[in-house]
Image 1 (tube, rainbow, N blue to C red):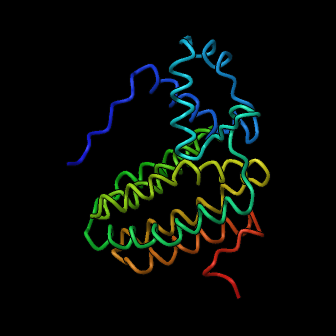
Image 2: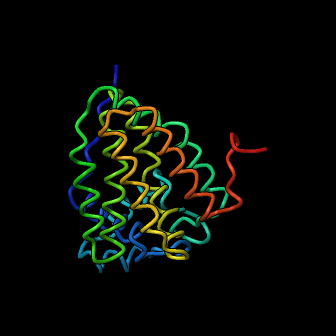
Length: 218
């Protein structure tokens, strides 16, 4: 019998989303300590929902819980980037290929690109770009494939946040996004998948030269 997931209490969900937003928009940086009492005061809650939220974030790979160092935002290095982007390279282009072949609507992707272009700060642009990528794979016709990509989505965004802080490359990526969407709208499933694969691979290679994936070794 399949078990039904226990719903997360509203206060815990509120804190969870708040901490996640701060991490993925660079307000909380890799290695930064996350102190329960401080977060509880900031969000106006007790320590219990904070503790539960941090446990959930540890499960998604955004924070690390250590018996001696406490809770910190996960550090990003070439190995971590390789692991996350290997998964994206294997799954995301195929999910997009299936979405295009199914004739799935790409309106959400177009709207996300428009929001990214109109963004006035890094946080807005980052969130819009996340939504763009998710909209490409979400309607692939395989819910499990979508959930698998959702599982690495936050970690990929953390990698991106670190990379953009060191070397902003918004314009190049925006151009690549527009080309991916153009091919998808034209119904070129294979072309869109190839463009997406190149987009993902080139980003991680620029940001983390040591993050060469298994399938890319010479």
